[in-house]
Image (cartoon, rainbow, N blue to C red):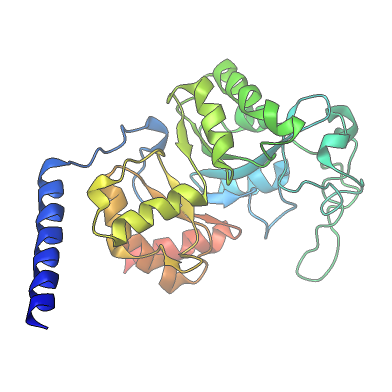
Length: 303
């Protein structure tokens, strides 16, 4: 028994020594800063323009949110049949417009005929924007309309589709043409899409990868071997919990801060949670209700 105990102690001591040695030799490598992410924390990004005040992804929604004083928008993009990039979240167009089928089935001209306010209901259940001439926006239109705001762009088309194979390069060429490299960030739940985009961008644009990279960062942090972690992203978007992973903790936020990686939370609406995460160092929040988010953050500052 004593022999087994001695062996266990020896192995444990060796493991601790190896960990200490690796930590002394291996230093963390923070990401180089990106100008697009240089904000006084925390910032507010209206998700698709904010879903509570006007139809999502329309000029009315974006203008409403901008007038509230948001720092920018979080938008999704898809490629049309004639290879134009539009601001649109869903694969199918029938959730928000009067058309049927997939975005990829239509040209931009055809999509521009759709009623982008067709299904939007207000608090009374009325349809105030139906037939009011609201149209789908291109990403270029949005970037030109709000040049002073930060815009995070999420690639929605899957890598193994025709549209998905084209959109990373199309997006880079648009960003380069408009000269907005320092005003945007590019993300996707599909890590491959961000990697493809960065083959063109060559780290000239802030990038955020998907859940796979976030889980890798978190497991490195909790394993006590965080000094081995080499980040491949400039920012993270995340809910407070990702499966069994508790992302919204002070320790993990500080871990990312040391690597120069801001984290923005996507599922926080209660003022107490907003204020707690802001104090913990959250870089910002993506919200469907920008007016309430701004109010919660301002009330915390005033207190």
